[in-house]
Image (cartoon, rainbow, N blue to C red; front, side):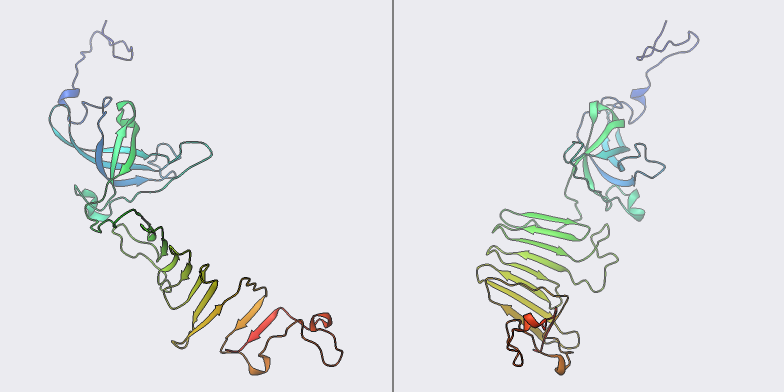
Length: 288
């Protein structure tokens, strides 16, 4: 009595034949052990009705290869992406770009180029292991030792000299072009120099620099009505600013309100220090 591989009994009036080899793309359904390269053409988030797991993003990857019969096959694989740690308490997760618009139908569009493999050769358990450099991205790698990271417009670079730069200009679309950016964002940047200096710069004329080597804090602000820059250089071992309202160098200060009350100053009438009389305040004002 004929049986299927899983033990199912076949009625005697049914014929059984192996048609896998005559169906392109099906010969390796349970024995796909090769490392494949493909492009992401679609994705389904956990709340998408077409998502099977309902837990992680599932990607549709278009793969071109030759099957066991020698036929060239273009077939979609449903994949999940590898987990950075694989433990219950730790995770590193990220999303991958899918092809957009009519580019989905092209052999090579603007979707992420990925490497996939199937667990136990089962196409139903395809996993994205990593990515390859997209052929449309032409920027050359930096010289020497480096780390060059960019995701959705946020860039992080570590150079050969150990310096690090974090730049946040705003989001990008799939082709790497600016996408719905705030017009006031000029690409704010934080730089950690090899000397130990730390600089926060809004790329619009305002910055704060802390220099351990020079024992210096340099604050620069651009006046909203002029191109004149106001600069404060605090050269001290200890700098504390503790107040609800501080207006140092403010051009809009009324002259009658200018000045700083020093707690150790002596009141001429009583001979007592200002702090003892309660004459100091949390509001500090000064004129440039």
